[in-house]
Length: 540
Image (cartoon, rainbow, N blue to C red; front, side, top):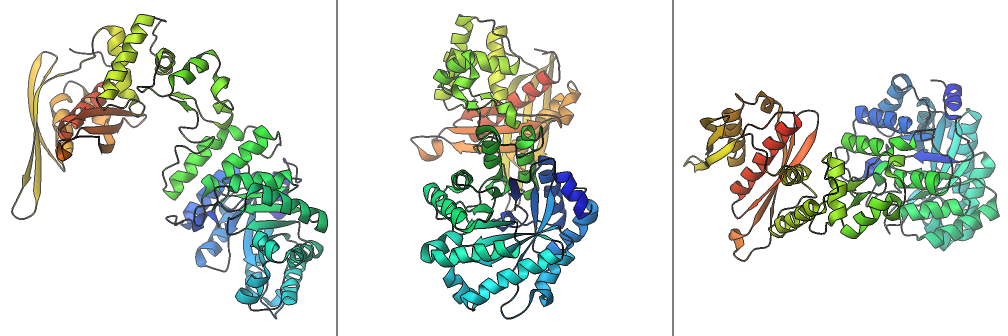
């Protein structure tokens, strides 16, 4: 895609306000994130689908990976909304931009937009760049004007701006003026150390805007936990360009999180910053990017977290039954999320009724039935069960109360798991199960890489002849938690198991003083629920 085509593609949104994503550069500096070129291409496609205006791809020439990314992005990504941005620094002290190899690499990247990082803190100029304050201004002017002459749009990141402004406001503002007068489209004020608070950011942005006349942007780190608030404070003060990262990824504790910033701008401010319909893709995009960087999505992230619209207290559920807006600040579907009811010992009748509706179990407004379920849940949770993390086990409990009996596809006579520790340091795990299914007694034995895996395999050996659907079931997660107890290893144990059939996932829970017994309970529920969802009629 040519520069002109990219500009036309992004013109669906008013250029008067920019959403600028720097996940591929600044976000990649988070500890634990190591992106391949293929990863960066995939994330860039997700961000373009989301509709951000600019995607900062990295620093071409600084490392082979970023150079390759820009080369491949030119031919492998057909950007529909975003323009690709190359990041680099102003020319070296004492040289010229036209002869600087780093500046040449920015041009060779083919990116239509360049972001230049410039020093705006006087001490950084003198100690890090080892040059004079006047030469630093000349470096900014020369590099910006040269790139503009070469047909590039230029943004300038004023690094450590807020700390520099506090130390020497006149010089910090002179850097902004130099960039603006040389032709920079936007000058971004960076809270590089992340130490600012919203009121401080707002006051500085308003003053710099009035004193320089430059178009301003904001880049906020989250070291005080205020990056999103600082970004919005800057917008309130007149900034029209926000730099963020997906899921708040970034160095140290991270950057301003793209998703709450965009949601606030669209929903709270009423400002159109995404293409029509893109906001509803926000949860999907957030989770897709988390998958690429191989980090578990934050369950409690605003707007897009799985718990963002999850309700547990019975009082909340009673109100939500009347009107969901009473305990939700927005309709979760606006950002592609869903409301969830959590069942726990805090649950009241309204919670159970709403959860039943969510699971497709009609309670018919039967108050006596609902009260029984509430009491059953509270009794079980007192014993250590948790149903908010085990919807499948709760649905089985609920259906047992509604139908008057538990669903049974098999009946357990006994089970046994053996762990053998051998002199050579190896281990053997073997399980035997004795069951009844469809009127027949079955004894099956299997080995596994642990006692629970051996039980899982023995259960399959025993039942797959009767229920071939079990071949699709796969245990994908296993968690053990030791609950409060009086005798150390005699404490109560809770086991949570996640299972999939390749299309959907479900979670079940088991509790006991014996971890293997608790695991067996969770396995029984997992198999039973999976067969229920597969449409198999109970045999017992």
